[in-house]
Image (cartoon, rainbow, N blue to C red; front, side, top):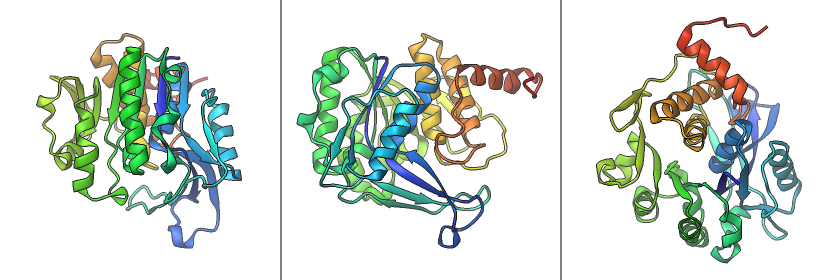
Length: 304
């Protein structure tokens, strides 16, 4: 198992493009959740991925697990909770104005994640364990489960990848600093936005691991390396950060130099923002190679 992710998987209902959420009558069903998006991205790029988490014993949970399995993601350790619902995310999609995102996750099955549910066998063969700041912010027990996951990753000799993925609807900045900021110091790979590091009051120079910073101007840096965003028309920006993480971690798993990891991360993100939903634009390996050739070599834009 190349990668183990642990976190939230929600049913996504996406309003028809360009229609405000309160006026929409047609919705597209998909799956969402930060770690889940990364899992889907890595699976499409050919890596073996295991998803750890909880869903409700409801149609939404069954749909989420079916979509994960359709991507080839191992869900054998997923917990189905008969007494709590699967989280729901409703949002609209506008390329030129603010997007309205509504979460219905209070008391969800994902928020009931308990540390004792996670065992060494789940991560034994993992090369990378990836988690985001969303999971420890779901509840006190999910926070403790995240701490246990990091301990298990260390025991297994896996690299810990961490993305703060700050969502202020889950809690005020002070709570993010209390729960999430310390976790960056326990990670081998940190993928964070410039604004997130500022909110968490974390100096990237003080972190021991590999730090990738996504800047406000869409530039990504890894030490002295710089990667500009590829200029593409943006249909839906949601999911770009998770796509970037999937591209970067894929490069790491294949032993690529960091500049290649950055370039592939930017390319995966550029493909995702051109499509609706968090996962629709995630490429397979061949599609990513074609996109990179188009972005960097100005080659043929039609694949015949």
